[in-house]
Amino acid sequence: MTQFPTSLDKLIELAKGTPYEHLANDEKALERMFLETLKASDDPMLREIGGGIADGSMTWHTVATHSAYAEVVEESLEKAREFDGGALVGGLDQERAKVAEEQQRTRERAEVEDAEDSFQGVLRRRR
Figure 1 (cartoon, rainbow, N blue to C red):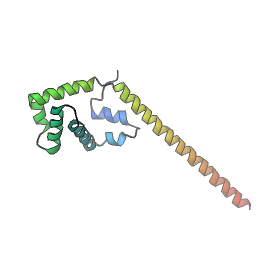
Figure 2 (cartoon, helix red, strand yellow):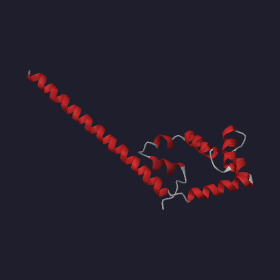
Figure 3 (tube, rainbow, N blue to C red):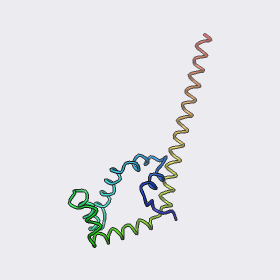
Figure 4 (spheres, one colour):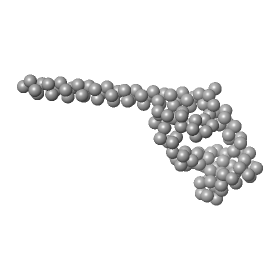
């Protein structure tokens, strides 16, 4: 089973060539998404952490040093480690293939249009 990305560099590498590449390279956007995910969690402690970090009433240091917060974060991290990274990688590979396919179609259309333009130019010169 593929591991969940354990660093930002690994996440960026996984997202390379997909529509999500720009997001993976935007740490502020990732943090906002992460906090929104925490705030929407079913777990009231995670919602509290997400809301507190987002509104500035809590820091990550507080989370790490408060035993109840640290425990719930550790449990959540363990779940993330068990996450099916293979499915994530497979999904990103599919996105990468879609992007490559669309780029190929765009190149082919451009080549056809160029050929048609060249043909029209030859016809005009013959007249």
